[in-house]
Amino acid sequence: MKTIFTLVLVACITSVHAQNAIYSYAIGNWRNGPTVMISPLFETTEQFTTPQLIAQVKKDWPQAFTDTTDIDIQRFATQEEGELSRITLKGKYGVR
Image (cartoon, rainbow, N blue to C red; front, top):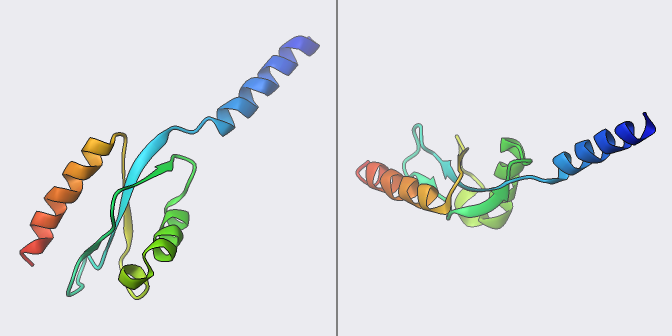
């Protein structure tokens, strides 16, 4: 019984620390801002929440995102998927 408990405990601890790598970018002023801001694609993990990622984006790119409103984070499983989304979004909002 003690061995089973130990194995379950180790499995739980391992699963908490084993987060998958994902790719994200931030988009700001997308609702009604004069200029839509899009951050570069960056690698992160599934453990970070949207508010945590927004705080990181504001720290990493303060010139672009300090006074930005309506910031959102987009998440992707692969780098290619994220880059394609950024390109599409730049084309869409570049017209505005």
